[in-house]
Length: 317
Length: 227
Image (cartoon, rainbow over the protein chains, first blue to last red):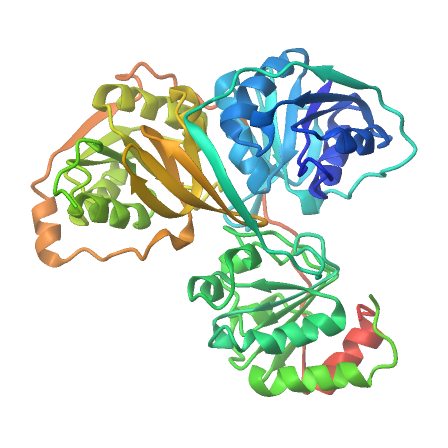
């Protein structure tokens, strides 16, 4: 039994959740092989070969793999998967887009977004927006599994020396074409891996008011999140959305500002270590999951919060 | 713009939320689709969902009756059979179900059909026999171009769901809904993932209310030690 781990990267660097996926894969079986598909991605192959949990790197390069279209990736992965018992990737937009296409071609019923490996065929996954944990057992001969990155620690990145094996590409799927990717560049930590996240909701009232949140995020070196309501209203862009249909975050500190706490939002943040809620409605459901609740008008509380932080001699980074 | 367009002879709609129906109605009203078919797979009362789609603009419905858990792999095989029969140019679906959050069916259907897939779409432009789609991804936005026929799964920002008016609800009652079973379509829908148990997640212990911002910052610094 060997595990085929699909690597998420940008042809130059590994995307961070690949490290969490490797940890999950290694809990199923120790023989983890990393499949790196891309174009001019040898730097990434080298990084992978140094990960102790990776036993082999399989590198496949072609121009049509440059932009990770699942229509191009899936047939190749199905071909490579012949010698493997499991195909694993992260349950982020990369893995969510790709894995079902692989599973359908393999005629396998995929297990999505697992938070725990019980045994090689049995996993725990959240259902009903995280209000229940289901233990599920796959009866398919080959298993396609996506893992929730925040439920597994990132693996060690140095000390390994896995061999790199090159393989041939398969033919291009010509009916889909990548045009462009607009990545929002930011000096802030990534939302998915940040130690502190501060999120705003409908209570922010408009996009300009997010400045109040940005100022605190700068001070705390925090990532900025948002509720669906704030994204739908156009206060902030989609990649900030935390929740059932957005990102799942598990920071040490999550500060929810002007967010009522619908279950769809809680699904994305309630595993955070410490939760702070600032809301003027004392009955808001967000207070039921908050370690520290402050019933206050955010337009008064946020400037005061910044002022209090400025008074501190030291702030953890 | 011409009022009819040979490109989109019919549309197939897998109706999970109201969002898709809105867009389908718009595309039909713009003259680019000649027919919108609403399809769902599920128990008897799932027919109400199809009826709702008919009330917001779909022309006819298909209800594939199925009891118990129907996995995405089975749903995608059922939809593949319906696509083979109806030959639509576009299939619209939601991106994930509200209960099991699988986020699989659209991608699986496009794989089985060997069609392009455009998941998590927040904007769609029709250009001749191609669609330019903006997708919501973790890093921001991605633009792709796909030939039709294609499968599109919708993200939250694609549109605002419309409400059905009373006259349209009445009209929808007269529109036809075809009923069939997975077995009629020759699909084995037996689940392959067994649900062994369902548990409640561990509860968070009750927190406290603080009376001021100063107290909050002190607690975060000295008690929780997170800042």
